[in-house]
Amino acid sequence: MLDRERNSHRHAHTIIILLGVCIGLLVATVACRLPEQATTPALAQSAGDLETEFTRVAEQVLPAVVRINIETTAGGGPLPDMEDLPERFREFFRQFPWFNMPDEEGGPGVGGGQVPRFRRQGLGSGWIYSADGYIVTNAHVVQEATRVTVVLHDRDHDDREYPATVVGTDPKTDLAVLKIDAGRELPFLQLGDSESLKIASWVMAVGAPFELEQTVTVGVVSAKGRLIEPDPSAPNMRLGDIIQTDASINPGNSGGPLVNLRGEVVGINVAYAAPMPSGNIGIGFAIPSETARDIVPRLIEGKPIARGWLGVRIRDLTENLEEFYGVDYGVYIGGIEPDGPAADSDLQVDDVVIAVNGEPVRDTWDLQRAIADSPPGETVTLTVMRNKTERQIEVTLGQMPPKYAGLPEEEEAPAPAAEDWPMGIAVIALGDLTPEVGERLGIEAEQGRIVGLDETDGVVIESVRPGTAAAERVAPGDLIVKVNGHDVANVEQYREQMNAAMAADQDFVVLHLYRVIDGDAMLIAVDIEKR
Image (cartoon, rainbow, N blue to C red; front, side, top):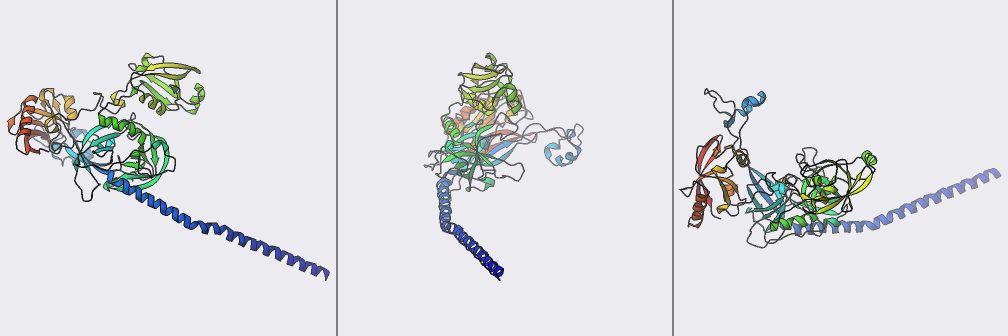
């Protein structure tokens, strides 16, 4: 009896304990849920505030973002012989008339002739830098363009294409400046501080991806200080200090702005990661605004962008090489250009550069940036490790050669635009036409003549200023023989007749020119409006 009562008390005590635990858990559960329920309205409010910010920024930025249409002339030059093509391709190419040239016995052709020149169109984005019509975009957007037009979005129902002049390009940073005359002051964007961006900062990319103009994408800064090679075929043209974002950037976005939540431009969209042909995978890249802050004003003012040059071949160190050379970081000197600035210094192959003017050099980009940011003629001090001994070496820098700055190797600067020529059509004499010049103009040439054309008088179009009426009608390589019906045998006569035509009351000028098409020369009458 006593044992049974004790057991009953024991069971009752256990039930009380279990009941207490259950009540405690219930109270704890309710307590845990109360803060969540209490914060739900606050979270909704925060989401609403963020949405309002995005909308405000888009409304502020969109009127100053433009679509850029470009036209280039492609093709030209001799065709390979049909016999040089694989058999499976020959039947396909026989359908094209320029491959069907008769052979010596009058039979079916086996190739020969010329690739016809044709106009190719492209699309990019840009943003208005100043109210008077200066526009910033990427250099690769307008590269080799024969005609550039801009579509504005500051007014409804204004779908005109405004002719644009390429003021200047800097392939090294992939930046370019255009100029349009809209006849009014335009809305423009301010440059922000890309240095103050932090990982996970909100950003917005604006542009015309896939020809879908005025498209806005939102994301965050996912990394900073990236080093990319947009064109693997040009290893000298690396872009550094690049902003990485997951705001979607696609074909057509190039040149558009990457803005912060204040509507300031913190980057210029330039590329995206696409290991598959499907397009963006969520990683885009933008040139930092600090780079544009330095380059854009110089392009507008027409000032040369001279960069320092060391004249060495370099590579990054592996962990094993760092241990071998006794350094924690640095850049290996693998070669010295015999005619470069470093050849006149004490720098040697197998040296490891660890600093420039006292600033650490941790990789090849650090060294390239430090040297390029120094003006030609300046003497810099390199700290190097040689045989595990630190040395100080002074080098007087030269000027970066054109090929490392993205310019043609035969000239120190881009070919001048045809600003001083009537209607923006610059010409050269037939006597100045060489095979090399012909290749640049997209035609096959011998000294003083165009192959396939027997004309010995006239002037050859060397360049046409983009955005002009002439850019829509003529192309480099055309041979002008008459202006408004008057013969032009040389450059002096061309200038004289063009000036007279421009002064006449007629609203247009008629040029008679020869153009080689499919290997044959054709005389064409071209009317060009004065505008």
